[in-house]
Image 1 (cartoon, rainbow, N blue to C red):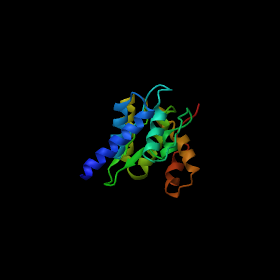
Image 2 (image 1 turned 120 degrees about the vertical axis):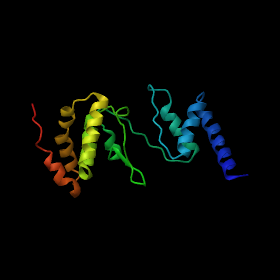
Image 3 (image 1 turned 90 degrees about the vertical axis):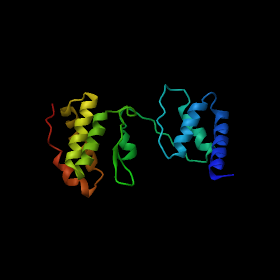
Image 4 (image 1 turned 45 degrees about the vertical axis):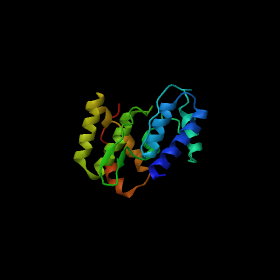
Length: 177
């Protein structure tokens, strides 16, 4: 039996085992398994009570993986979980994660954090990122900029020396009303 055939057989066995606990979702199980095998990510969306957590918990049990769940709340920003909105691949290519659909908090706060991260290395990329976000979402740039002092102050509490000067420069740039 070839390596490919062994992988296929094991994947099908996992899918069958998962289907014992997740009834009627064969396509979803297959798609999640493919993403897992490919080293990808999956965003499961749906109303509460449809079994999203049960699906992931069952997959983790069948595949002997760890399982942890984070419940998004209005005061939780995705960058609180990941530490950033930027993914850097091994080849150095940077991707900005679109958390707008995942976050129940204010996306502009996350955009402000990502903007500040870009500013550490590439001011032009930072400006381009913010302009693109504002254009795509219809958000006023001034509104996003009002988050910068708040995000900068919050980030200063993490005491990262490489960020200190930049973050301090943003503390008093907006008028508060």
